[in-house]
Image (cartoon, rainbow, N blue to C red):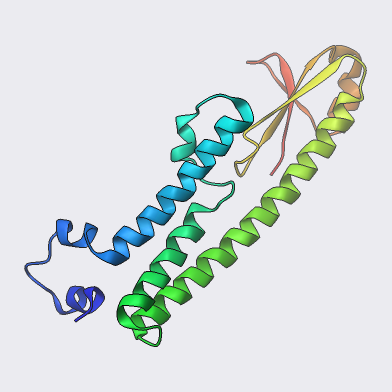
Amino acid sequence: MTLAMGIIKGWGHLNALEIIRHPWFVSAFLAGGLAQAIKLATGWVRTRRLDLHGLVEPGGMPSAHSALVTALAVAVGLTEGFDAPDAMIAVGLGTITMADAVSIRRAAGEHARLLNRIAARLDALDGVTTTIKGAQTATPVIWITGDTDRHADALTAAGAKWSNKKSAYYVRVA
C-alpha cells in the first residue's frame, strides 16, 4: 500500500517521523534544499557576501519549487511505477507548478522592464534620483528624491505623488 493510500484509508499508526523518512519526502525536500543551497552559493560567488536569507527566499534560479515537484514525481515513479495513479498525480502537480513558475517569472521580468523604463525617464530629470523599493512585490514603489521642487509639475503630470512623511515623490506601480 502506498503512503497516499495509507493516509486516505486512515492508518492510525502513521506519524510524522514515518512521513519525513519516506523516500518521496526525502527526495523532494533534498532537491528543494539543494536548489536553495545552489542559490546561496552562487550569491556568495557573485557578491562575496553570505546572505542566509537566500535559503528561504522564493524566486531566482534554480527554482526550488520545480526541483521539489520534479524530485517528488521521479521518486513516486521509481517506487510505485510511472504508470501508477500516484505518479500521474505527482506529474500533474509538477506540471502545474512549473507552468505557474514560468508565467510568474515572465510577468516579473515584464514588471522589472517597466520599472526600469519609468526610473530611467525620471532619472533623466536634472538633479533627480530614483530608488525602486519592493521590486519583487505586487506593488513596487519608485521613490524620487533630489532636486524635485524644480520638476514638481513634470513629476505630478507623470503620476508621481508627494509623501509628506518621507518628503519625497513616489510612483506606485501596480
